[in-house]
Length: 80
Image 1 (cartoon, rainbow, N blue to C red):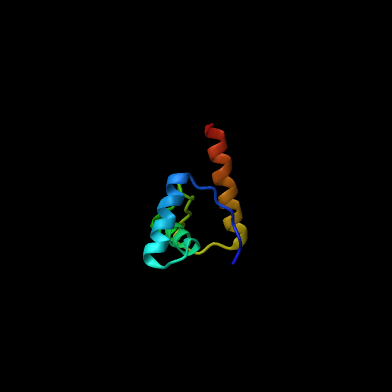
Image 2 (cartoon, rainbow, N blue to C red):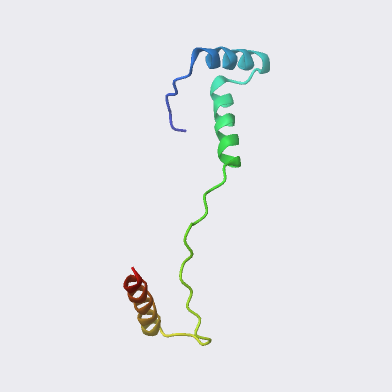
C-alpha cells in the first residue's frame, strides 16, 4: 500500500472516530472504503467527438488507409 495524508475538517474527524469505535473498523479502512465507493460509482465522461470511420465496402491496404485518413484531415482543414 501507499501512504497518503488526508486533511479532514474537525467534524468529519469526530464522525470518523465515532464510526471506527462503533464498528471496530480502523479509520484507514473506513477511508479506503469511502474512496472505493466513490470511484466505483463514478461515471467516466464519454468522448465528445466521434472518430472518423472509413468504409469503402472492401478492405483497404495500410497505404490506402493512410491516404484516406490524410484526405479526410485535409478536407476538414479546408472547411475551417
